Image 1 (tube, rainbow, N blue to C red):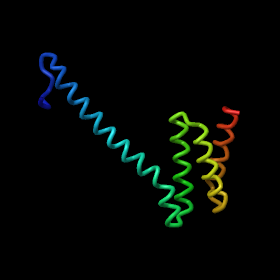
Image 2: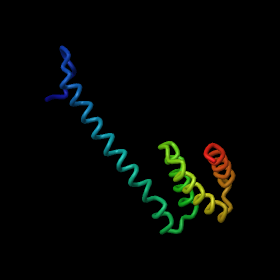
Image 3: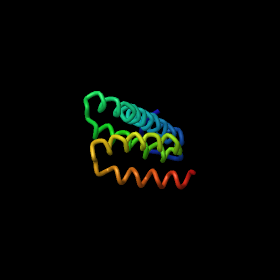
Image 4: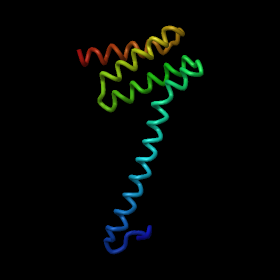
Length: 106
C-alpha cells in the first residue's frame, strides 16, 4: 500500500489514509486527555491555586460538552471554591454557569 493519490477509484489507498489519520487523532486525543486529567493534581502540588481552579473549570466545560452534566457541576463547584478563596474574578462566571446548569437539570 502506498500513499499515492487515488487513481481509478483506489478505495484501498483512501481507506489506508483514513486509518492512519484516525490512529494519529486517537493518539493526540489520548495525550490531551492525559494532560488535562493530571493538571489539577500538578497545579495543586505546586501550590498554584489559580491554575488548579482554571484546570477544574476547563474540565467542567469539557465534561458538559461530553454530556456528563453531574461531573461538570462537581468540577465547577470545586473550581468556584478555589476562585472564591483567592478572590478571583472568574467566580462570577462560574457561579452564573452553575446556575444555568442547575436550572436546566433540576
